Image 1 (tube, each protein chain N blue to C red):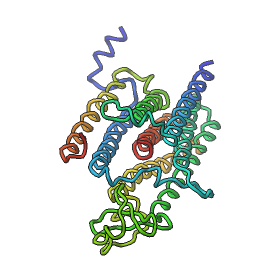
Image 2 (image 1 turned 60 degrees about the vertical axis):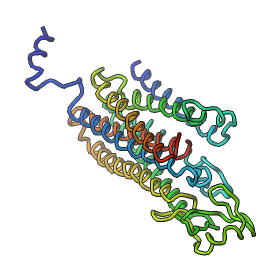
Image 3 (image 1 turned 45 degrees about the vertical axis):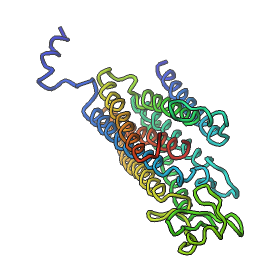
Image 4 (image 1 turned 90 degrees about the horizontal axis):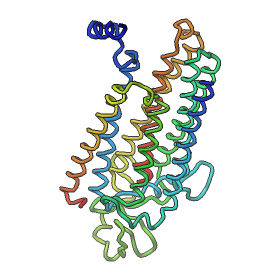
Length: 105
Length: 261
């Protein structure tokens, strides 16, 4: 029973990843025009969709395939917390410096 | 009672911190630092893309070939590569799953398929690189100011999105040279840092895939020899599995930021 449950979960995650990737590829090929003209925090709706879908995929890979979802809370936080702090910080610093060169608003 | 004993021994060793073995914990911390390395690369890629946004090539127009097919098929090949890597991640997690059940035959099957998936991915990447390095049949021209232009007809060129006639571009054309394909010093598709970042980031990821395959093969031989059967657990498969999923995870991000955004 336990076996069929966890293999089923693996395949469910596979289909989630597969469908999300297929959506990304379809959007990348067709590039709907309303998604290019609408902006969310300075990023086009299309790119924002890509980024959100990617983070959802990352959540499933790390949570289910890498089994982090079933580890101790302390382990989960010691892996994920540095990312959530350092990566946005890095992006903030680098992209702000790029705007200093007049490249972005 | 058991709780208090464990608390007393907490600082004396013998207790697994975070209920994970030493090897697994260290693999997690290594992967965390490696993730920060890759995010630094991708963040720097973003910075340079903003800096040179006028001359930045569009990935769709660069990587639009598919083996054995003529014509332009943007995204299709890289989507296939992504699919192969996700598939090999699934076979890996199944190998880990049967490892927990001490089912040696199934571990051999799924681990073997994972290695094959990894090899197919590396081969695809080699094909993609070779295409990028050789470039297009017509190539493009590097003008006197080092910017890239494409000839569109007998009388004008396109440079950074502007169409310029030969007469107006004469000074720029005088010291121009034709370039084909991309390498670390020139890139027919646009700004040369695009090519540098492409080679560096996908190369670094490809090297992770390569070393992952080597480690998988070592573990595979151990499974065949029955090492983990004797040891009583297949945790080694789980640890290399963590690494393999991480490689897949990085590719998910490289795919988004190189090919989609």
